[in-house]
Image (cartoon, rainbow, N blue to C red; front, side, top):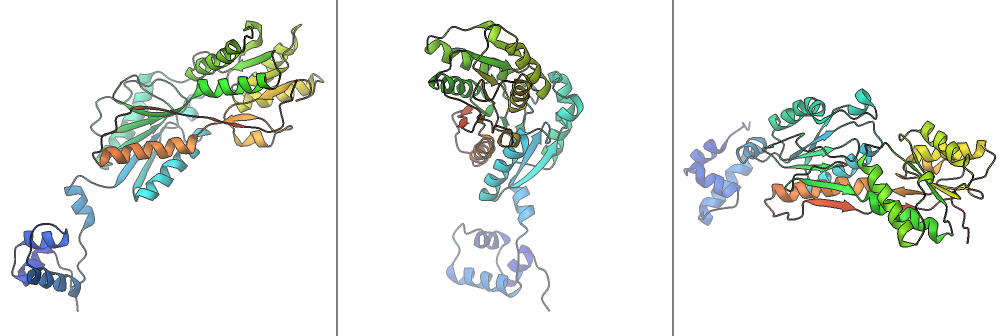
Length: 348
């Protein structure tokens, strides 16, 4: 009957030191061929299996990555996590996932950094105690979270959020570029009266998307009309109300860009209720490419976010860091992709 043995037992049976056995197991050092064969025969005879967990802990290497997600119920989180998981599986890494539940507790009213810190730090400490080799932090909304986790002893990559610290890693998407693409797309279709329904005024995405909209107008020598810009709150009802405001004006837009798909859905309903037609009378575009956008009538032309790619890149960066590679670039902005459907009409 075979019994469980350890390196010390193997060393005694082979009449060598434990260091020599360790060198054979780990393929290092200089060991004579006869001695090496003797040790291998003993290992095979007793089916010795190295304690990988103890070995990894000794080397401060657990092959695990922690993930802190501000709220797993928000639309962006599952796709980012999907990308993280795909990259981790490819690299044979494990994931420890934690959830702050920030949206469930606060809705769109993001608490200040001190309040977020109260929720994030227990999860951070839990992951550090589990000896993860790095952490990916997934935001609920693109925004500055500088000093949320300060002086971390392990590397952190922020995605769907960022910090001002020049040495912090972050992976996000190009809000301004996406909005520029949408506006230029409409201009190329012959539209010059383009309405815009923004998100919350305190949102980083709102300002970036407004810049992209204004840039496209300016480059095509179209005048910016403040009356064509309405402030929403990312929800369906605000898309409906703001579209009603746009339609009540003497000069009506021929196209409306909503800064997310929920508000675009509200805009479509408001246009239908006003007895106009989408897209023949008024075109509508969204942003985010949420699942609902393919089920609206008409199906919504929108901007798709590279969420899965963001998750993969965040994991790639952490993997490079844990392997002691020099990752020079700290901040990444990935391109969005226009998804053409049926909600835009050409005015050419």
